[in-house]
Length: 212
Length: 251
Image 1 (cartoon, chains in turn cyan, purple):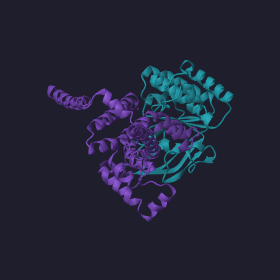
Image 2 (cartoon, rainbow over the protein chains, first blue to last red):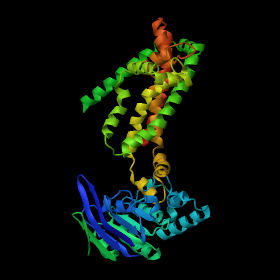
Image 3 (cartoon, rainbow over the protein chains, first blue to last red):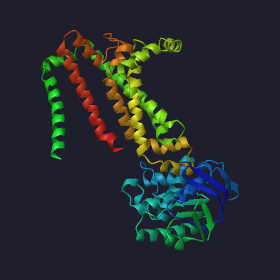
């Protein structure tokens, strides 16, 4: 469950005001809105990368408003994947578990399982520079899922991909949500993605979010 | 376009002519004789050691400051940013004078009691460092400006503290930039003359570094010695430039 209660956030040029919405446990929510409508800022607020001026954020039954990103138990897939430039695919996927000092055998098993699930086993020794857009997003998704997040936040994960790659990744995203115990918030401006993926549809406009 | 090419060619030719004239001023045998002399070997070793220490210290300081100025947004940031460039625009001799005067104050004298700096080898390093660090900071700021912050954000959601995210994700990506910053600082330290002369002096076999050797040779009319040391410095600077071109620019 993701629940936002009266979240407000302001910059001199832009404001989100009294944003409230809820995404039920293990459902797939798609948040739509025009470019510049505040979708990315909202995702960053839920991640803990920006601090709201007021309001509260609940993930499951926990109020995480004052918690730093590392304690929120979220997976985050930004628009371009934001892969770590110096790490191989294998190192990227195992990174979160290494930071949490998990056993090497567990890390290896998780990397193997996620690489198989995402269809990137053949890329494990490659670095991001040589990967296609679709491959990068598969790696970013595997990396986000490696720490078993309760909530998966994705910021326009398909927007820079061609239509064929988008279609195959949409199937992968839907399957991922069914196979993992995770609540998804997927930000996009694409009706097609919303049609294919959404259990819950939200729209952000002029600083407010409405549930469709 | 042809005019631009001609301007560029003329400029490079002028430099090539100057370096060629310097190189042909004396014979290789004479150059060798100068370079193996006890005083010049000492000055060379001292230059290499002090430049390396000053460059390493510059990078240690430049990485956090460059990161702060590049990533953080705080009131007065542009003022701090401008202040960091002051050592670049100040006349080097003035920097030396400022150092000398600072270490005459009560606070400076207290530091001198722990680490003697005025007219010592440590003073040579400090005089090189205060200017070289400003160049290293400018390089690192530019390096961090070109590295996206988003991977750090992702690392934080994966369980890293802010420091861990910078350490594990951003710094490895900035390693070529750190090498470039160190090389720039090293090259700058190698040529530093004014502050070293004023603050650390020009005592043979004590605080004499290569630029001081050139100056000492010049003042007593031993031009061949000055040329030989100058050629050694040109060689070292060119090697650093090649190093930067091969690695630093690919940041």
